Image (cartoon, rainbow, N blue to C red):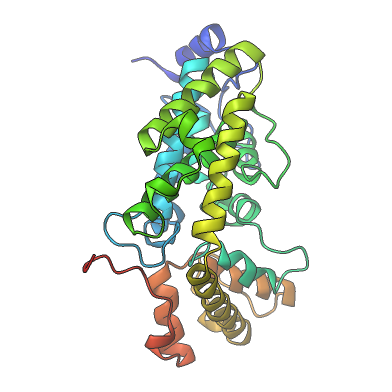
Length: 338
């Protein structure tokens, strides 16, 4: 058997300079004994993969609420980010297990209904709700992940400080590459936009297909990292990705139908959080609220419970407990008659 210690020695010998090497049980908040077979970051990846929070991503919005069988969910997005990130990390000699752990866990803090959930939960928090921070500090806290993994999850968003590992930085780029390419593909198939409308500043560099975009951005990152010695893209690739992201924002995320759906999501989720604040005994999360705790803990517990819900569970709760008319719920895009 190729034991953990042997593979740790292989990492020391063959990973690139600056890559994050694993050692023993890893750098964790709560000490534990090392695993005989798995490195610390392989253990993190497995814990995330088998977690309830990860499984629930299958029922959470990526772009379109109530996605059909062929549209992305948060779960398929996480898997696609993992593919992009590990392709880069493997090619440049970084720690693939750490990269994969960060990628699989990076969106576990997302609530139902897409990014609108962050606006809903921010109403109750002085510092606002950031899915990246919440995922690392609350959703996945019980897994006792390595601090390097948590840092990559906490700081994968570009609005956050850059992760302190190269692997975390790769995931941050991979997240943007993946959602830009895949969200566009879903929107084209849903006839929200057409491939002919993609800006020439993008297509002349990457082509108009998802496979061409991924291939170009991954190859560019690998070559740029190898030549520059830092996690980055070439100016040409960065400009093309920026144009693609702007196109998606203008034509997919910020289109009138999407904004209307977001307003509905914010209204429903904020009502649910308020309901659980007023009825704490109905919170059924992994860390049930103790009525003797302070009000800030009650808010945290209520947000934690609602943020863990899938789209269907949350909106059904709104009907069952808040008395909302099912016709007032967000609507998915019906492709059956297209």
